[in-house]
Amino acid sequence: MIELRGIHKAFGENRVLQGVDLDIPRGESLVVIGGSGTGKSVMLKCILGLVAPDAGVITVDGQEAGKGDRDAFLARFGMLFQGGALFDSLHVWENVAFRLLRGTLKRPREEAREIAIDKLRRVGLKPQVADLYPAELSGGMQKRVGLARAIAAEPEIIFFDEPTTGLDPIMAGVINDLIREIVVEMGATAMTITHDMTSVRAIADKVAMLHDGVIQWTGPVAELDTSGDPYVDQFVHGRAEGPIEAVR
Image (cartoon, rainbow, N blue to C red; front, side):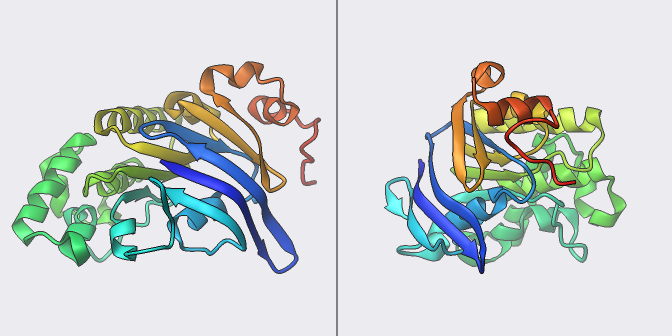
């Protein structure tokens, strides 16, 4: 579904991506791991066209990204942002239905509200939550609302950016389970960025390790502990010693 070939991106002297090659198969869940500042979010932004790569080609379903109708291209994606990124001046249901209230996906307001309430139910939130504001919700509830918004327009591809950041272990487990269930249920292609190895094992079909601007290793999640790759081994087990230098 998504192919990256020779992707380079630099910001001044900072060469973030230095020839990334990556395949994300249709209907599979890929998790990208790597240290902070290694370019995981930049890679995601390149796919979405929020950042233009300096070199290389990205294709989505065989079509080169950035070519053709931009709105139609973005309509294929859903996104769960790291910080929730809810609009504090909108009701919860308006946040969930944000894309359904405007643009190419616009629906009548009542229909959009019904869809939003249905998606809220799907992530375990009661209909009465719909008319609250984000500030009235706990962090875990806000994350669920963000997940409901990500799936509201039935996207083919969903990106999850650090989906469990700031959550306690129990709520993180709930979000991981929801993500896995929804991705399988929708048959969506998923890409997740996370540092949380519990999330990796719960969400992933395949894992890719990004370090020094390139994909160091990729393989099934079942092979994560026996990859034989020193970068993966150090990261997965949280060792201070290894090829990845800890910032001191």
